[in-house]
Structure formats: structure tokens, C-alpha cells
Amino acid sequence: MTKVRRTGWREGMRKISLTKFLQAELGLSLAASKQVVDDVLEGRQVLLDIPLEKDANALAHAIRELGASCTIEQQK
Image 1 (cartoon, rainbow, N blue to C red):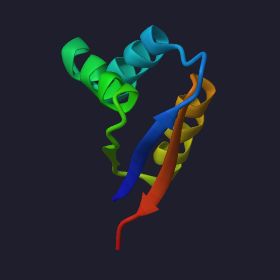
Image 2: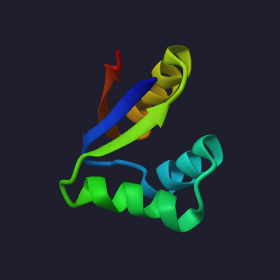
Image 3: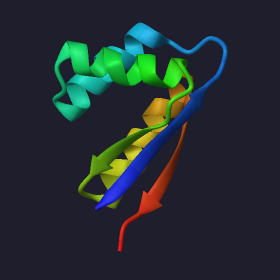
Image 4: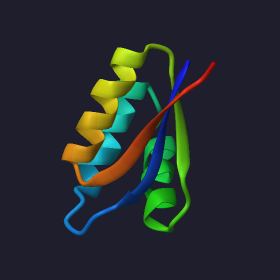
């Protein structure tokens, strides 16, 4: 299991695009996706569990492209 830790955001983050992306890619409800984005905007870190490392890397890349910062943590 790999975790993607959402650690922050930068000015110009595309909040609506990121919310829709998380909803589509992770199968979250719209409310849950919005909560993840709002948590990061309010300074709280969010951990997303991703089963495959390659999927976690792709997700992290897409999240960064939309203006959020994140790190990838390997679980042993």
C-alpha cells in the first residue's frame, strides 16, 4: 500500500478541477472530494491510500499539476 500525503497548496490551485479529479479518480462522493480539498486549504494534511505505487505516482503528479503539493510514502 502506498500513501499520498496532501501537504499543502500553492496560489492558483484549481480547487474545482481538483475536487472533480479526486471524485473521478478515487471514487469519492462530491462531498468527500470537496472535504479533502477544503482540509488542505485549511492547513490539514490528508492521507490518501493508493494500492499500487504506479497509481500513487500518477495521482501525485496530477495533484501537483492542479496546484496542490503532496508526497508519496511507502508502507512496509
